Image (tube, rainbow, N blue to C red; front, side):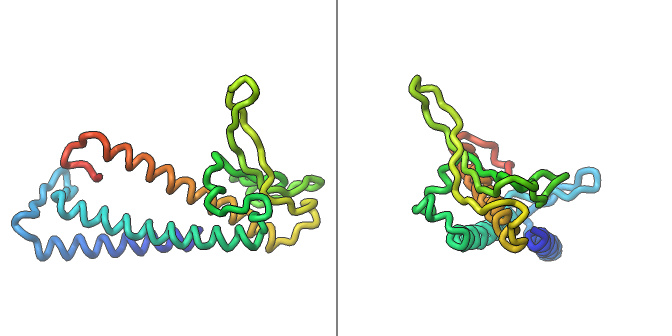
Length: 187
């Protein structure tokens, strides 16, 4: 995760440099307005920044999905869910036997079994939606788990969640695109 943070810091740096260059070679059509010592740039400059950030996030997303697929195969998730793309239809994914909360992150729970659990919602006999847990991978008792394997299991779940977040953002961007927005917004 620190590499993503480093990439984001580097991108921010490059964007600041480009903004400085734009200021130096300012086009009369790209007017700047100074409000309480903050510089607000016109729509063309904002759009350039948004486009660069979008390209960066698409690269991050592509790298993430490649790694998710590698872990999908390495952890043999395909045995329970043969179609890779189908794993993103699940509503959520969790771990049993390993903590993912800030206070117990990565800690194995002695005496518990390690599993990757996918959560979906399916109608019951009355048509009411109920949460259903599906085991995508079983890895044995917590105390006998290899530390490298534990890290890969955690990484798979976190990277799956990361891709799911990208998909949710995409969904909301599509919805926003369907409404009329003022010309001075970021989108």
